[in-house]
Structure formats: structure tokens, C-alpha cells
Image 1 (cartoon, rainbow, N blue to C red):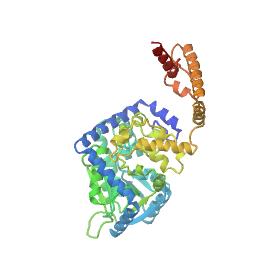
Image 2: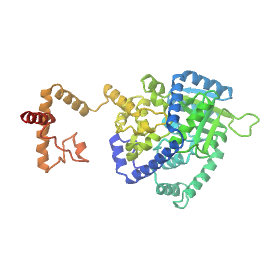
Image 3: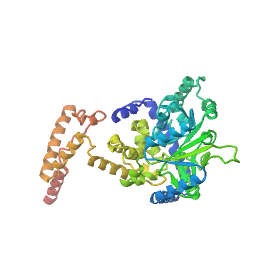
Image 4: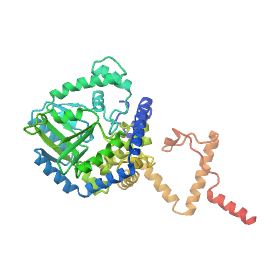
Length: 475
């Protein structure tokens, strides 16, 4: 991985920008998904679909306690077990206890951003339980020892040449650039894992409250294998991943698949309502649903509930000029792109842990325009920036600069004096370099490291306007 996710933010960005292969891979993948989404939404009344889906998700947030209790009742009525987890540590502990009670040695997982969020794999591996990711993208990055770089396409940052080299090293197959051959090698390796696993763990794209059904949406058969072959199935969902009825599930499914991959419907929609019945030949003996908070209630309390409408489709990542330039690992969080820049600080115990992310945006509003539930991401980013300033997370140079500006702008006289001083100083520097300014002292050198700084105008607008008015009066 060319980006060290544990490095400081600026270092991560520098590493991403210095890797042309990463940039081209991300640009190629996102451009393709943007085009597919546009075509899929144009095939239906996309605006109506977005409005209806948002209204349904707003209803869910307004009635969240009742719907969660209804879901719990129906899962239990179906023979399943429901566990409530306040944070990631508690959720991991619950999964470990289930695994230990069932003598689990190997776990196969379907794609799940929520389990990535709580670092479930590491928690299980620390107790000597083998964990195998079975989504092709997740499987690739697990072999590479990396983290997902995209909500929907975890391996969007890799070229086929990288994957070929990885499979040659890890799966001992001949080097090939044939996608079908690479997929066949992964399928053969994963098939052995499915049949030897004791537990399957999945995420949850949405859960239907009225039926107690957990739904996962995939384009590979791995999700269905994970939820039906092992004797124990554990699903992990955030408290917001709810729909009230089956009809609402169909509505959200349309919005999700069209926005995520540009499909009218994904290849698989797997629905689990509990363990296998006595007269059923297939299915797990145990079904456990873990309902996770992990900062989501705090998001509601702090007036960021709109971010919980998110379907995790990744459309905002695909359209974002920042994400398309640096990729997902530069964000240093499970969630990247515009939605990641909002929820990563909010889900963290301390917003300042990801204080740079709300600033990693041009505020161009493209993310809001493609969001299937019309989340106003630019407004949320601005609100977060303001909160971080109030909480004292702004860098000291920035604080000093703002104070200096406030003092200079406190009166007309001081503002004009500051402008004249800036004009004189910048033009003096420009004359030494023959035009624009090529170097400024720290911290202003962050600008001149990548581009020239134009000098301030020799005449201010106010002075120009006064001269213009004086000429008119003479005429």
C-alpha cells in the first residue's frame, strides 16, 4: 500500500499524490461508476426516487426506538437472538463470546463496513480465530494486508497488474491479466473456506422491522454462502440500518443499487429472518443480530442526524474531486470521501482525531447532487468545521491568522493600512523575482510550494473607485 494510513494527514495526502498508479486506478474506477449511476437514474424518475427514499429514511429516524424494538421482537419470534452493543468494543466482545460458546475456529465474512468500523477481524484474530473475507475486493485487500479504500469497491485503488502479482505470490498461480482467470483462482480458494467455516459474519444493508429480516445486497454469491453454510450466522448492523416495511425495502433497494453500481437490481439480495427451521435442509443452526450504536446516538444528539440517512452507496465518493485525486486511504478512516469526512469525526470518541477531514473538501456540492437521499453534505462539513473551531481543534497558526484579520478588519483605517502594507510588501517581493512571488516564509510557504503567489494590487478597489468618481465629476 503506497499510503500509510497511520501517518499524519498531510503525509498521507503527499503519499497519495506521489503515486500516479493509484491516481489513475481511482480515476478510472470512479469515472466508470459515475457514468453507470447517471444512466441508471436517468432510466427512471430519479428525482422522485430520491425524494421518496429520503422521506422514508427520515421517518425511520423519527421513529427509531419503536422500529428497533419491533425489529427485535420479530427477530426473536423467528428464532434468532438479538444483542445490543453500545460501542465497537462491546460488539467485538459479543461476537467473541458467541464464537467461543460454539467452538468456532474459522469465520468467513461477507462484505461489511460496520465490522471494518469496529475492527472485528483483529479482535477475532487476537483470540486465535481465523477470519477470511469472501467478497472478492475484500479478499484481495486482506491478502495484501490493506484496508478498504472505497465503501462499495474496496479495491478501487488497485490495477489489474497489482492484483495479478498479488495472486501469483499468495495463491501460487501463473501471472495473468485475464480477469476471468483471476476470479476463478479466488473462487477455488474461497470455496474451500466456505465448507470448512464454523461461523459466517455479515453486515446489513437494511433490516426490515415488520418481518425481522436482515438483507444484504451483493453481486457475488459469497454473501449467500456466508449466511447459509456455516452453523452460526452473526449479522452486525448500525442502529440506522432500518426500513419499516417490505415495500420500503424495495424502495431503498432501487435507490441503493442504482446509485452504487448503476444496476437496476443487484445480482443477489439475500434475506435472513432467523435460523433454519426443522424442515429446511439449509441454513444456520444459530442466528445472532448485533445492533450497534458506536456514536450514532451522539450524532442525533449533536444535530448531525441527517448523516444517518446514508445508504452507503459510495456515490458521493465517486463524484468527489478530492477523493478521485487521493483515493480512500488518504482519509485514514474506515469511511472516506465526503460522507467519511462527516461521519468519521462524529463516530470517533473525539472529533479532533479526524479534524482535518471536514477541510478535505472543495464544497462544490456535487456530493449533494448525487446522493440518493439528498444529504446536504456541504452544510454538514461547514457545521463540523465550526464545531472544531469552537472546541479548540484549529491549528495555532490558523488561530493567530484569524485574530490578526479580525484586528485589521475592526475599523476602516486599520483595514486600509493592512492592505497598503500587504501591497507594498508583496510587490517588493514580486519585483525581486521578476513577476509573481515564488517563495513565502512559513506557514505561507504551503502555497508557494506548489504554485506562485500573485502580488496584491498596487491600487485598492476603494482608491480606484474614488479616482473614477473624481474623473466623472470633472467631466
